[in-house]
Length: 316
Image (cartoon, rainbow, N blue to C red; front, side, top):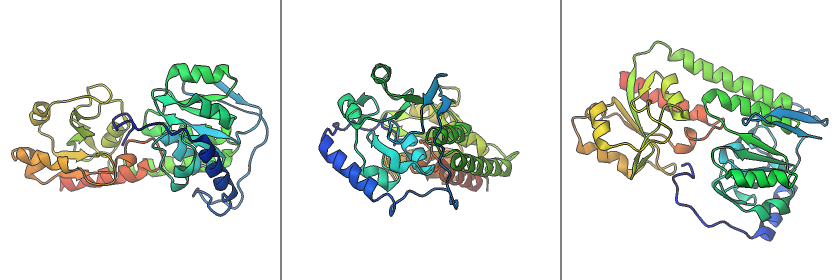
């Protein structure tokens, strides 16, 4: 689940331990390389690179990044996906995929960065999260001379764009282009398969107390639309708190929940208290692991397939 709604855990500052773990990971990178699109040879660029980040800033590196810090779990995943995982030297809390990311030094939470630890790791690129990281901390890092690329993926389409930009900054443009093209192709295939289907009204429940859903400008809303669904709270802002009465009034065809991890949340069955709901009457209560639909990573394709399948089932 997104760290925005998880309990905040203490920041780990055992830098020496992290550095040892990072060295062990680098030494073992040849035998434990992260999965990526198979290619016979992955050309690595060595010249200066420049991209425009999501804040509209030009980010220029004299050479492709070799020591990268990721300040968002989704960006960590994408860096590993493009084959730059062995260059990641630090991550924030909840950067738990792929498994190799779990042993990397943790340099804080998304909203509270350990500046001393970041400086000690001497990154040549910091991949930041515009709406998740403190702006004052990012400005300070720039003032200290670090290259900061600000990412703000906002849709399904933006995932492929992040892949392309991160691959350029890492000197892996061909790898990134191949991954982005494959992602777009699979996404378009799923969209084509659900174009013109009967609309299904959906209540997506992120959390139970308080009752949190998704608004119209969110990744999950994009997924619901692609699958031929209609988010009952699409007219609300990001991460809206809603009421039970509001859900009952909309009377959705399907209720889908995420929860905290890969386990189905027990509170999803609380809706059985209202047997007149269409979703309850027709046994249309579903669960999707949150990381598959709440992170802007390539794994979102798994979440799209699952959600589309649930809506297809609801259509009969």
